[in-house]
Length: 310
Image 1 (spheres, rainbow, N blue to C red):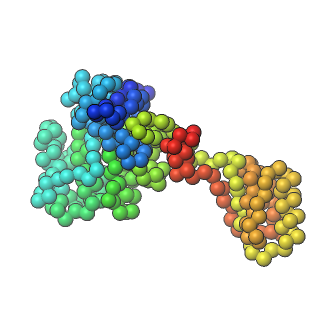
Image 2 (tube, rainbow, N blue to C red; image 1 turned 90 degrees about the vertical axis):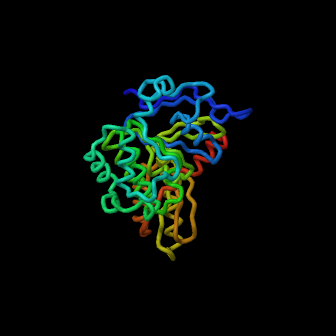
């Protein structure tokens, strides 16, 4: 499959500072890709390079295999973008704003505008002035604008800034819908780990201008087979029964058993052993009320990668 977006040794130097440092990356159709990193890591500069707003010091940006700067008009016509909070003509309605943009593109019929308005679920507010829109409604209108030209690639720079939880949920839902139903490649820059975890298929972690890791989200969130597993028990159980169960579990798993008085057993074992451990507890009259695997969090993995510990 040909990459929608490909970066080849992309570099941007301003003065004596290297803002983006020799980045190589491929992103594919229908993929939601996250640029993840701390403030000042180079995420926004990368988005500006991908939009052709600034020229790279060296390296190439390819859109569907074509050089962005060598084929600028053709390439940019396949990109939609929302950079932070989109701006509109506030005295015009949402629909009038879309009409204005459609005229700039040329050849976009009203039926296409109506289809997009329905797609982003903005039908009830589309004929109201933008001045009365909430931030979430403006983000949806911004997404509608980004979709007007049927782009193959959508670039979003910190799109969740300032949104309330409902607005974030709506934006996430629409972006996944765009990727899945329209096969559009979506690139999102953010430092909000929890939202990137829910939104992205893969993430590229940027620090000090360098792309230091590219990982599938499923890899980052997978449960570690040897992570501690906690079995929650009822308080006030017979201490002898607990000790007997611990001895049997230790003999069976060879793992370390940590007892939190009367209520929990933390067992380090492969997850394949969970049914056997649970069986031992039940056979010793120790009812289990919850089983939880406590693998390394996304946040801790991210910090380890950024700090160079992996």
